[in-house]
Length: 399
Image (tube, rainbow, N blue to C red; front, top):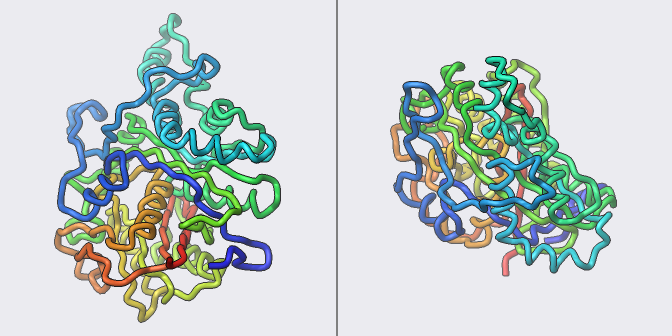
């Protein structure tokens, strides 16, 4: 595989990566979770009053202390991010020692930041309790990237993207652009989002939470399960076993929370990614769907797939019935899944085993986990509120 994919764009290599979620702490645990019918969800009652909900909670033990310089930002979200980062920190520091600190960037995605740690305090604040102090830095969107930049001691560009469900996939695309623009030599990209009352109650008010474990494209689908994840990647212009090839982005601006019913923006994002990577739809060996399990989202995504992959039987599945919808971290954790599919070359993530919607069952859903022939390219979709869409493509060279 050649790094150059267009006049102005080059693929970037994923040098190191980590993913923590309901799928476990290692690629091996993730593979088992995604290729069997094991339940990865937890039923919780602490998020919504008088209601139990299934969530994709991460069981990893998080670090208990953050550096003194980050105390003002201390939150479970930050501790989650640092826990993930520390898994690959020594590799990152060794690799980036060759670069100037001003040439090292951080671009991350989140939608909740540290709001969970302020929720109780904010309730007291709004009840006019003057004895409580709300530390806003905990929940500022920009804090995530700036805090990890400070932790690493880097001095290049650092910013956080918050476009709901597409945040972290967009962070990966932004990192590639920084490298292609010659502004940095390496970038830490990805996303972190944690479970909190704000998002669960918000989706509950929208009547979008599933009463059980979600079934993307299922006949009886009734909504999403919320999850949490931290997935980080160090990317650079150097070759790597898996390359971040391309990203296609579009904006529906159709409705504040609903996608365009015909999937126009989704189809545009997928086609732009293919065009940027100089690939045909038939080159894609697996498609990781956005696949939220809401009635409208699944229907429009399949319409988009039919348009882009017309007469092409691409294997596809949604992994959100295993991770939950990880919001600002969804794109990153699903990219992490796709990266390890390419590295392993022996399996694909199972779609759920429930009954499919007869209006959507004309696709090649992954119902047999075994990968019978090697694949070189995978696509992953992330479609957010407001129609802030992105499709990314990862690729590998056969050994």
